[in-house]
Image (cartoon, rainbow over all chains, first blue to last red; front, side):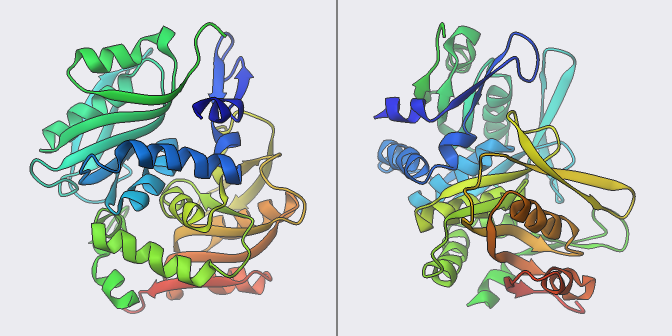
Length: 177
Length: 177
């Protein structure tokens, strides 16, 4: 049950700045039963989706995305911050609260029309995940879905991603708490 | 066979700076058969080691460490750069080529005497991995072994880690090439 996952996620008030209730998945991930359960639920969701590869967003998306890729028997593509990937890359720029940021994937990471599952730990405003969707599309891939462990619906990220034409899924939501 | 892994690792000359032959594991990780094979070999190595948790070093160590943790049915502990973990941490400082760096884990990530497998993609000079070993020991854990995909023996990192009393293992070595 996703509720038992939720109970293993720690909330840190006022981090990284005052007013933010930070949802910390490390307590879930470091828990033997919790981590297995999380992967069981994601595998159940995606086992029949004919996923070609899993892409994960740096850095917590690597933790969940790579284990899920292994469960699904497919490769893993890291979506990284600018300057971290050594070979030729494709970039996507996006606006943040203050200024803009750039994410990258390797040019050769995705085959034409490959079915890509994008994974991150949490969707808040959705800026990075939406940029990752556009980046993967630009690289020639098809985003099957964006899967998150945690959704913060009050921040509207999932709606923004869906309004842009991409599907989303999440296991746990935090709203008004 | 580790040799078939080696063939899937890309070498990028002069990255991140002139004179460095960068061994890029993303080509292995994104390859469906390669990623599965890598995990098969690591699982074979560690399935009978009674591992309590896997710790992985940010960020490429997350990719391999978390999938291996899932294979082993245990939780995953991220070893992160300073300032990335939201709750109370334990730190370890270590010297780099220019200046020093700090890595952290959450204080509550490791149980007393828990058997920890430390994973990273590559060992070069070994500074970060040795600091991670000391950090985990400081947190009360026992390092069962440090497992790497790639060793660069000319840089002496594995020897340095072993001289400090920790065991190491690697699947692929690059020497004089």
